[in-house]
Amino acid sequence: MPSRLDRHLGEARQAVLTALEESAESGSVDFETLRRRARSALGRFVIAQELVRVAHEEGCPSVAHSAASKGNDQVRMETAIAAEDPLSRV
Image (cartoon, rainbow, N blue to C red; front, side, top):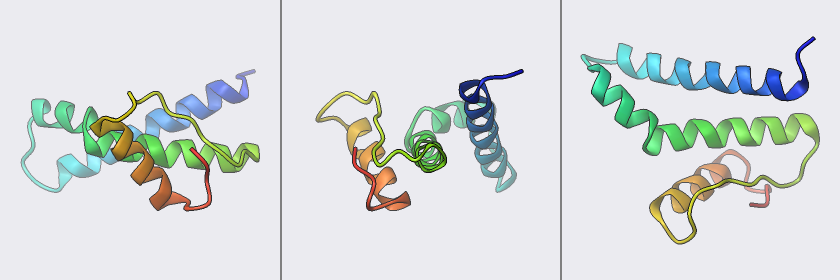
């Protein structure tokens, strides 16, 4: 029987793949472009969506990310988290 963590990770992977697939279907996008998008702003937004979703499911009032402080990733993650749920603490 899979653990709750395994279930959450599976759902998060599926969400990332779905977002990338939708991005690819929107135009002629090659693999390298998809890879860059997964590691950039699009990827951070999908990760933030999943963080907030899982936090809500588990009843957590806050989320944590591993982006380096005072960098673009931190800004992307915290902005995306705030967009998903302005009341979540980071």
